[in-house]
Image (cartoon, rainbow, N blue to C red; front, top):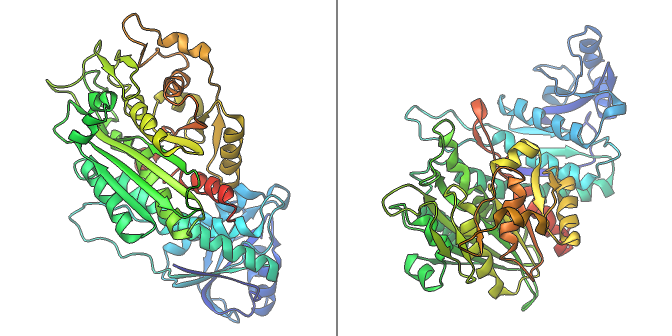
Length: 498
């Protein structure tokens, strides 16, 4: 979608639909007043009749407004001025984009970024506008036999801002937001595909396609024999029960100085998690196709980085396999040897994500990374702790944790730091191996992170548990594309490209 920031008045800009913000109870923004004056106070008349309450998230489409340079006017409720903040602005932009997607509007002109709350600058207003428009226009790649509904008509977004300085910043934000949205689409499409389509081999093909599309991305894919030669016994222990062969995907993005240490992203790629021998309960098991969301977010972040031409070096590592029960599957009580040489007693085969990440985190050392972030739908315990709003962040590195937390706030892709300490390791003691792969229910998200920390000693490392945020259930079932926005914001700041 084409997007452009302008300083033109709402009374002068022609479009298919003008998007105007209204505060409660009948408080017009400056852009709304300008257009209201141009069209003979028709917007004020709608408000005076009580037809539009202007509560946050309310929308009303005026299909004919004589005197307006736009064919339609969409009123968007912003709530009271005193409580208008970044979350309210993002909510208003999203509902506006959703309303536009239901119309035949091809070119929308929005003035929701004309008067910004104190906690939003024009750059982030532009980013939010692009990201929310893409989210509203996104369509799941379903496999229904019925004729697909036509795609939304919206092709162009003009964002009205206050002045020339704001225009330059907002345009940068629009461009960055469009790149982030393109990465989120990669992530969402992978997550939404069924597990008989999105297999480890499909993930590998998608990575190779990224490499073909972007010359800055180099991709290598290791098959089972090569994985075995590397001594990845922990990874292969999870893959053993499936007929679907595993793949180990390595991506390198070279946008920074030659020889500069890269940032490494490691994504959990369980394309379907049955629990293995420790079989999950059937209700909700279909959602275990989303257990590769960490891997999908790595691919999405690489797509966004390449689109932005970020001046930074990146490495992505994706161990991809299924976790299935069979006569070949790993059993509770088995002991496996990881690539690092450490041994693990498998007490529960449903604690499999940490096993594949252990070998991936060991492998990534060869790149001598400046920082390592792993992303995984790792534990239901994190969902219990934080729900569906925040992902869990665990790291022994205060500076790296602070960078990720700040990025999460800036991007509205929020994370919450949880503790990680050797005290939790007591729960993973084993009489038969170096440690066990699970420590019970208490502090389950933290003991999982502690397990990973045994494979990251000496690295600047952080772990994102995205089990609660990677997808929505129920009637809105589908991938959210998180935490691509968080990761790209983190990389933008590190690259000083903002």
